[in-house]
Length: 95
Image (cartoon, rainbow, N blue to C red):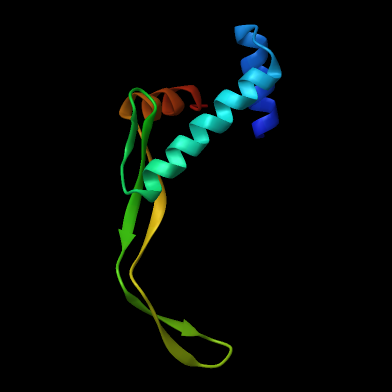
């Protein structure tokens, strides 16, 4: 599902104009990004947690040049789904 499809569904379900739904979705995404950049986790009860995980420094390899290189420690964005969310997905995807 694309962002445009999400906005369209929100607009249909809530009865608000697509431009309003777009503003809300864009604002939500911006707030989540800003919080993670500031190393603050975003907790959405029943949905999950957006956070920045720290990756340790490690040695990598450039196989085309057969050399090693040092990959510095860095942060990556991460999402941890809530238990209730994982359970709903598990129960709905059973065959």
